[in-house]
Length: 259
Image (cartoon, rainbow, N blue to C red; front, top):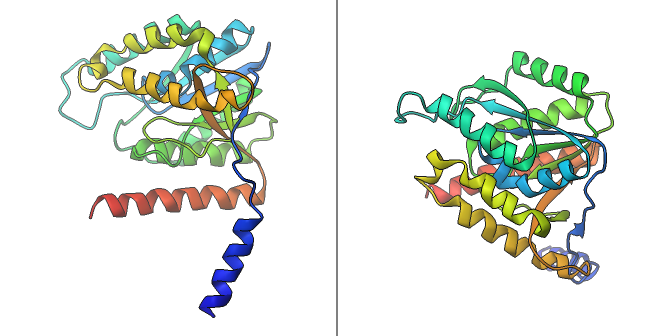
């Protein structure tokens, strides 16, 4: 039996392409783009360059911040107001001024019927062509929970938006990359507006370093530079199963890290 299983796997592996890589995604032009960020800064870390390109292409961009950014405790009074102010400043650099704050609890987000009704209302009112959501493989629990909730809403929604997961604290098995070389300094400048979290963690360097790594994929598409990476979701039964496996993998990661 073991020999049969090994033979089966060898056969499957032999049929794989040698090295399939993410393709270059051309930014949408003159469309409507909706991005959901669990916290103030996630949007710029994950796809700040892409948002800047979309605005340059004439797209209308709405950014929805799910939690209030107040942290899970231990942060000084006034943190929520500071983080909202920093978010507005960062997105202004990217050319985005349509912001929504849902003020869910930071660090303890739980999906509810009321939350999903808010999301469905935003989708219905804005009618996006593209939708960006946080990765369900991310290390932060809020990111996972919010990504799952948003994906469920998008699947039920009657619109036709393409949906993309973006990476924040952990890389994705990307299917697309966007060349952000021409707007890299805008992304760097926008990230620098988040002074409060940057005082605790230099994710500015980390984020730009990840963009440099993702830029390696551009050479395979005849380009070079910096890039942001995404996984495009599909609204079918097959992809639903993949989403569940991604969540199972995230849970497995946590078990390993706690040993």
